Amino acid sequence: MANKPDVTKKFGEKRTAIVRAASVLINETGVQATTLTKVARAIGLNATSVTYYFPRKDQLIVSVYAETIALLKEMAEEALAEDTLEKRIARFVQLHVALRDRIRRGEQGLMAALSEIRSLDQEQQDELLFAYREVVNDVRAFFGEPADEKQRALFSARAHILIEAMLWWPVWSRRYSVLDFPRVETKIVDILCFGIPAQRGEWNPVALEDDGWRVREDRPLQQNDEFLRAATVMINERGYRGASVNRIAEALNVTKGSFYHHHDAKDDLVLKCFQRSYDRLSKVQMAGYDLEGSYWTRLSSILNELLQLQFFDSMPLLRTTALQALDSETKVDVVMRSNRLARRFAGFLIDGFADGSVRAIDPLVASQIIMSTLNGAYEARRWAGRFDDQEDAVETYLSVLSEGMLADRS
Image (cartoon, rainbow, N blue to C red; front, side):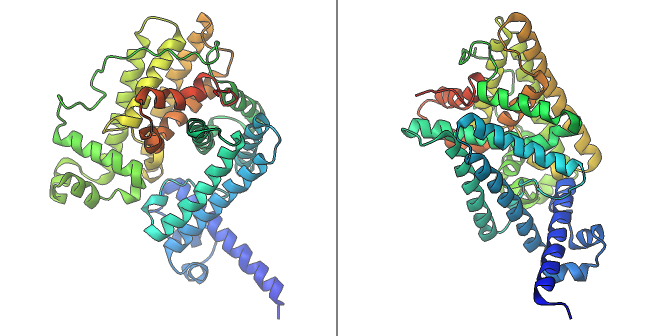
């Protein structure tokens, strides 16, 4: 008969294997499509064996998220132990890059995308979000003790953007060989620490003339646009699974029948939300391209306008939280369009090298940091709402790009 330590060790190993297999499935197909049967099949067990460890699917999902957050906290704490801000940022980035290297080399299931936490029961959600806030607090502590509320707001924005950049990294890291990871890591740290423009801290955006990308009172939304707005906000708030057809219909005070009159299925609506968001983002980019002035002025004007949408417009841009739930073919198309928009940002940066307004950075890496900064801005709406001046909120948030995280703004 095996002794108790051996039994305990075997139990822990099997449980870890189940959690890691579930992490892989959640990342590939989303929470809804992840079943105990699929998890069991992935590691050569039957469903009954999995239910011995996790009687219900939601218990397994909570464990996956809890272990991911625990890993994030472990990395944040390790980085916080460094003795300077630059070393903390560099260490945090290095740990995330190293994790992706291990996963690429076969160490599967170490981290799950956290996009559907808000679709869980309130009690489960609250516990996980509390643990996640502890990670944010650790990363904010990289920057030291804030002298006042204004500096606290700045440190909060920096922490949020740094974490978002690392959570977006697994998506775009696929375009690089692991042999290139050390170089990419260096470029990420450089951009986060020192910003983009050649003249550090330069921020003089030009107001763009709205070409239909904003929601305005004098331009009422059509019913289909209302569906897109409600679905976008719901998905941003609650993730794909939490944005049910019932909830979307209730938010608009219409029937489910009305929903299905306009849309074949929820996935159809989600895809349209992505298309509308990317159409709006593209319009803003092209409006900025037509401006006079340096390419950094054009880029900063675009970023300023897009942050106004994310912070204050009643129809923000869709977060990438819905990506997981899309089928593989559609997901490839959505990511491809996202990459095209990122490449357009890279084009602005390259032209900025030529006119001297952008310093020598890697434009492809910088464009992805721009995308994660914009994508994560929706989560900072409440943060932005505390500012008396909307422009001050946008400028503070985007100071990470205009001057970097090492800048002393006191």
